[in-house]
Length: 93
Image (cartoon, rainbow, N blue to C red):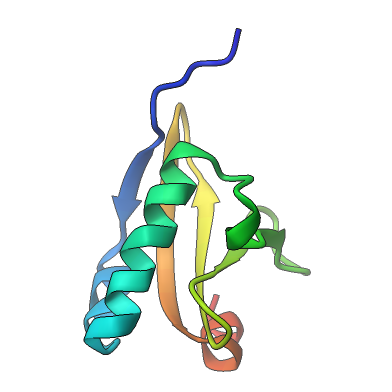
């Protein structure tokens, strides 16, 4: 039986810094998407996909233009790496 307990989120300093660079509306959307990620990484609005050329880094959508990257850590952890506009964010993953 699958555990219904949410995953533990670990925010890197880089993620925290890049989240603060978002406007207030984008930060609110980010909070909503991160809540979905913690409860169900397969939630359809996240549109999660593995980033090609990386061993274990994934991207998820905040909205049409903003993405965040993450990876699964040991146990039930998700490590949030960076957030921002699509192209610059994914190039820095």
